[in-house]
Picture (tube, rainbow over the protein chains, first blue to last red):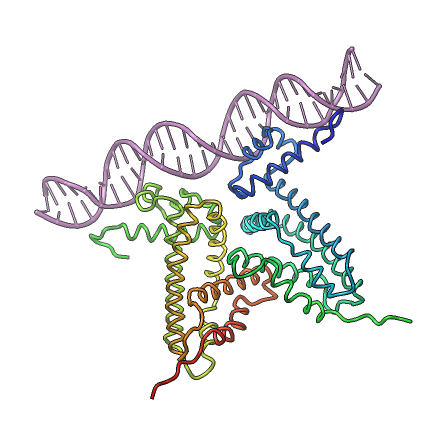
Length: 206
Length: 206
DNA sequence: TGCATCGGATACAGACTTGTATCGCATACG
DNA sequence: CGTATGCGATACAAGTCTGTATCCGATGCA
């Protein structure tokens, strides 16, 4: 928290984002009025409108924060890859750590996706954000396979879509039936084998 | 549509339910005001409030209608069971016919479930409706196994939960990735084998 | 320190919903 | 037919949220 002669805008947006995160978690996207979010941030709507255009903008800002966290975690997992034992399983287990924050985010983004389905403009914006995140994941997948001395035999973009689908599908089911399925059980169980089948070893030269 | 000296209440509720179905489909649950639903039904809010207490009541009425359709379809499939060839697969394929209406209902009920998560009273009501539907499915599962000359080796209630989870999980993924997965592909592929493993043949006497 | 401007606060107008209280017509019965 | 009442229409009173126009104090540079 920088004090002194600093422009206060960054601090204001940080407070708004923090308040939005908590409010969305408690009351959902629809249930959270801009007014309530601002109150929680200790600000007025004036502050909001001078930083964002709509409540959706605020969501997308949170989306980007979340995406960055995901990417950071995955990057670190790939970087610290231990080639010794079952590296794929290790990476997946690590990426699959689903904490409370992740679960809350999942609920929120599901609600927002349903909202987007009814609002084409929002849907386009969401698709664009999704695309950017997927691009990063493609990059990481490529890096991962490379470090494993393998190269993909299918389109990496499709592969990124699949891992995402498995991640989210598994999460859904574990939320519906918490006692029946661990959050990342499906991914950890099936993805290592699957990644093997959609890639091939690269011949080492020399 | 009965005319003449008939109480008009049934006709009014029918019109409200029909209008609600269409409005919810277009604008979602949150996006549909009671007012708009009534307009679409060619009625005023007076008609609504004299038949329902809240918008949630209306949703639950639709829930019951949908549940009845599901049960009817399943019942018929079990009744017409052809013991000749692969009966399980036949039943599942039949129950798994996911039409446009089913997909719309899935979107709506997902939105409503998220809503219920934030509202304990609603959650309780939803759980109760879910329970009643599951009871019917338990009944049908029992009937199905019986006609196949088998008896369950696990709790039927749990089994009903599982089939539901597979159905919904598969639907989710097929909505996210329509080109990658047919709506009931998972159920048709895995449930027959699974049902075999959780039941045993009944010794025929004589 | 004086001053320009940036950024958050305030005030206002308007759109939408909701729930209730009340009214009046049509229905169904004697 | 006449009449009681069932039931949908109407009117009313809040409450909530949004977006904008405007104000004023803090910030940061000369």
